[in-house]
Length: 255
Image 1 (cartoon, rainbow, N blue to C red):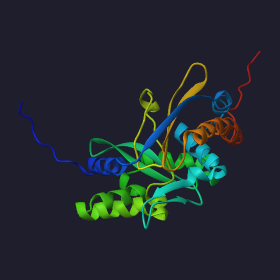
Image 2: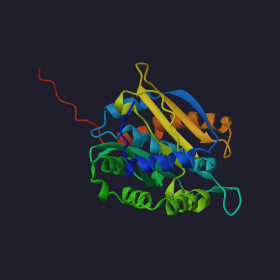
Image 3: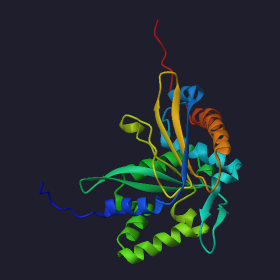
Image 4: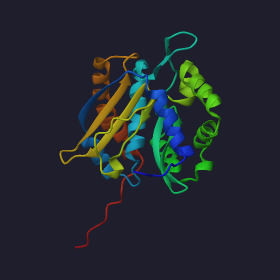
């Protein structure tokens, strides 16, 4: 059957490079349904509730502030070692349409645990709507993706294999979800070390969460504890911030 060849666009080249960088990471995953009833109640009463991606980014970063292992990456150079970052750096997968082509580009958010939830949400919303050339992280990624193959390989190798550069280029954790498109249990792949994915809110007020992690960095028991603490962070710190941001006005009912 005769078809036609198609060039790999710059946006697909980025995904090809990302998948190549993720091939050797020994990922393990753990999933659990989290009860988020207090969070849902707080969000329902908020004037301008933050999006789910922003809430998961800040909640995971709050847990990582207490759990240094969640800020730890595996680095190969100058020799294999674990490298603990002083703060969390999130990468959020942003779905865009660029020049008529659907694509996914990561947006970097440094130290989300120290930012107001509204600021985290604003960064994500801007990455979704602003022209791609106006988002600094997008420009940085596209510049690297335009490099010739040997230089591109070198830049990725530096970013992946030095602990300090891992934080600058790939962050300490990633958040990705297809809940906005109907949900489903997503098991995304990145260079790691931690990836959080979430589904739709169910009728019983739970939400299914998957954490994938680099097994070289930690094991299943700590991640099981992290899921418990993540549920607490969503229902306490994040819910409290939503309440503090202001509630919807209550209309008086005439009699």
